[in-house]
Image 1: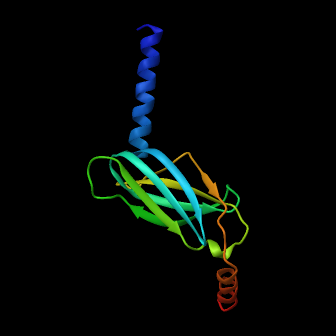
Image 2: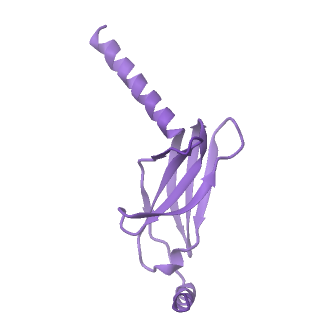
Image 3: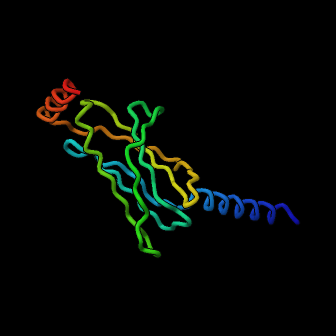
Length: 138
């Protein structure tokens, strides 16, 4: 086998392995800052043996905490758009929030999507004060 065929075969195998492990092909992932919220949006062009997506948030881009699980949509073909709204951002005014998603396969194995998005939402002073009052009584 010549070297060009070997490289092509390697690229095909690498793409196939990534596709099988990850379970999805994401064409877009972004975070949109809103007033007292952050909306995450990701567009998926293909899903295979996927149960859903874990959504994570971080304040430093390193230490992430799971926020939620978003199940796959029931449509079997075509492009799918997923959204998750983080309404708990009022708890930390003036911060940058980092988000990432993780694929959860039907056999419960997981794989992280490599892209991390970040944003800094606007926080109303009333919601910030209410969050502080609630925290005092926990």
